[in-house]
Image (cartoon, rainbow, N blue to C red; front, side):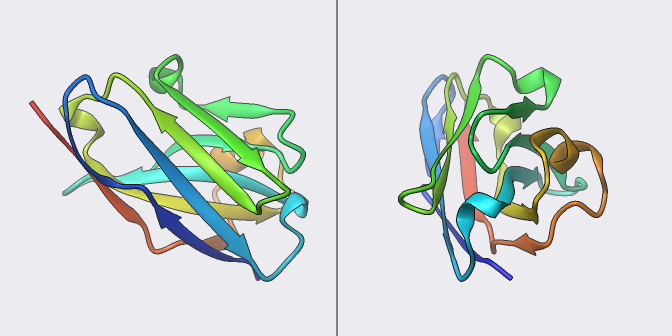
Length: 127
């Protein structure tokens, strides 16, 4: 399996921006659809965004379109999540996920699409 390590979380005021990174190792990165999920305190983990292995296709939670942008650099084995106009309700632990040969849409719609998870990085947005 691919190993995943998130970074870039932290505390920011509402309206601010953060960029999360997910570094992958252990397997051919481009073979994996990649995604971001998040879990807020007291809530279930939810899908945020996903990107295909080539980076040519992306898929977002509808409510986050326009504020969040997912991307990847296969030469660096790294995926990113640019988060703009952050709101207090974006406060959560953000998890990186990988699905072998999965499309972007399947990462967000198929329950068992994810093969590997990172440990998460905390994002706190204050009002």
